[in-house]
Image (tube, rainbow, N blue to C red):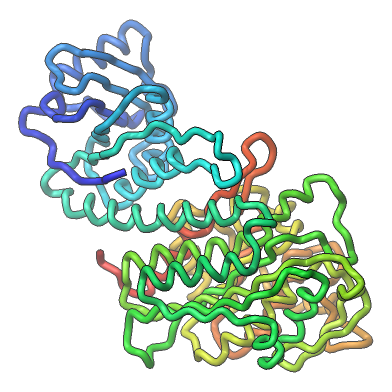
Length: 486
């Protein structure tokens, strides 16, 4: 889709040269501002054909005096970017099956950059469909051109939001596509190739390390997870340089378990197919780097992705085994299904060499986080309050919510081991917290935050599929740190 911002015609929306108008009507708003359309709206309200409530739609065809052949009026809860996004999605659904070529979106009132971004993200949500292993899947019919109509004073903000929205939407789609591909297609090798492709397109330095290189570095914890699989591991390093070479970077670390059986601590068979999504953290980091590469903020960003499978075999790590991490700390592996933290801890230690301004790891880490927060908020842990506040602010701006969780030192008690410096799991109580406390032991030398996205990275059931979260959150966080004004 081609997005553009247009100034509202002096003659009103009736004069717009588009085949379809999508007009968002906040419940507390006034009229559209176009005589012909307002008359049609008042008539529909009077006859009970439309209510100004969130989610209500009205389709008008061939309205006399209006250039556009189709008009969809859609109610929004209010004028917020979040409500606009929901309303656009509902309006596009009302146009399903119609041959729309040029869609003009009219929000009414002041158009802010966040509104424009919401328009693009709503269109991405409508446009994305998975077809890689399902060639029979038909792509939705969507307009080739989408115009956001704004007043002259709002035009710059609208253009800025559309630009940012398109970059984030591309990152979200990439994250969805990567995560949705089955484990026999989306392997660690595939993730490495995707990273190289993104790097080549956007001028990043990319290295993809194999087992020998990882052994040479000394990532014993990462290696212990990968040793049960025949699929080769990969350690992916992406470096985006948008500031002076010596400027401390933001480091993003993504968990890349391309399939998780649980290892010797085998998972139940029900819904195990969804464990292809256990690389959702890696997918979101790749999507974020894709967005950053397009927007080119003046900041340095490094992405680190440890990628492997967690499989049971004669070579697999056993419960009770002790491994030595890159940090030199030893770990007693009490449960091989708590493997994400074992690959992340070595990547977090590796991050020290960049002397980072901050490190954020992203992982589908614990079922306990799903129990705690459900499928709406990601769990946020931060050792640095300013970093935590920055991520919360980015989550609000991006409509990609997270919730700050505790890191009190008392939660460390459950990780004690008689045979190593720590165990890889504690008891069931506070499982997401103790997992974060495990990771924190490898982050003492920098400001660190952890996003547990186990509840938000994908949907199950009839709507099974990746969400692309938290690409929006991470991108807004990086842009804010860079002081991006685009």
